[in-house]
Amino acid sequence: MNNVLAILLAGGAGERLYPLTRDQAKPAVPFGGIYRIIDFTLSNCVNSGLRRIFCLTQYKSLELTRHLREGWGLFSGEMGEFIEVIPPMRRVHSDWYLGTADAVYQNLESVLIEKPAQVIVLSADQIYKMDYREMLAWHQRHNAEVTIATLQVPIPDATRFGITDIDPVTYQIHDFEEKPQHGHPVLSPFGENMVSASMGIYIFNTDVLLEALREDAADENSAHDFGHNVLPNLLHRRRVIAYDFRDLNNKRVRYWRDVGTIDSYYESNLDLVSVLPELNLYDTAWPIRTRMHQAPPAKFVFAQEGRRMGVATDSFVSPGVIVSGGRVHRSILSPGVRVNSYADVDHSILLPGANIGRYCRVRKAIIDSGVQLPEGTSVGEDPERDRAAGYHVTEGGVTVVFEAHD
Image (cartoon, rainbow, N blue to C red):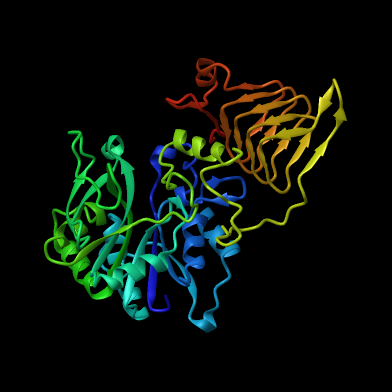
């Protein structure tokens, strides 16, 4: 992997995750208590031996930049390792990043300086566990010029993905079909009664990438996007191969999430506290790294049976949390959260620094970072009352409480 450069696309606005992305980029949104979404792709890189990384940022990137600086300083410059945060610098034209392909195009000079044989392009806002060494070996074994990682999904789910048409012998991709609605998508050669969806993970031979991006930049009609423009234009001119994603979770269902909506974010988080969650965070062979804050151990106080009990069941409890005479069930408590006496929190996600006042009742909710719930507040029990209070309520019935800006 020493001759491979990783480029993480971390500039997306994450509009469907609003209001969690109101003040920060989607890759910086907390996940699973102590993590940020970007930690999963970065951990895949480090665990795969990829230690030359460009992280292309754009939208509200301060929190993300701080997280990378303070939590990912494990690369050795003496060994040629790095993680470089690159905001738009308008080197080649006067616009900000216009799309995923344009973001890389604007940094071609930086790519050329590194002289990689291959470039792997990754999204910084997906959650999965994958060994990129296996994908690179597949790329080289099949003499590919471009390799696209694909995920097997059931036929009914094809309407949510870009579906690939793959040769069953050579694994060469002949065509893409974006979110087919006709009910008869092209079947996958990798699994019976499945289709292969693009995961937005690509390996390019560097010369092919450079040529493709320069051509795309010259096309005034292009949206400058890898999935919609660059790759379809390469299909019939270059050897574009499909790689079947191998999930390191080794579970019944392959785990890959883009947590693109509040509802999917909520469900993916709450699954983690299950007895047998779909995503295994306790695999010491494939650790998920993050920035660890200096914080004391979690603390549970008041054990007055029949009055108030500081207790949490079926939950994640992060460092710095104090459950002070409140009850928590099937919830995720991020660093620095406080649950005060007689409060009752159930099936909820409390983001860093949230403070739940006495006698509060919180159900099926996300309490944003730093929110102070006043004593006796009820959240998640009456959607109309929540909306009237200025909270955000999703189609799936998840209430998000966030601080209003002045």
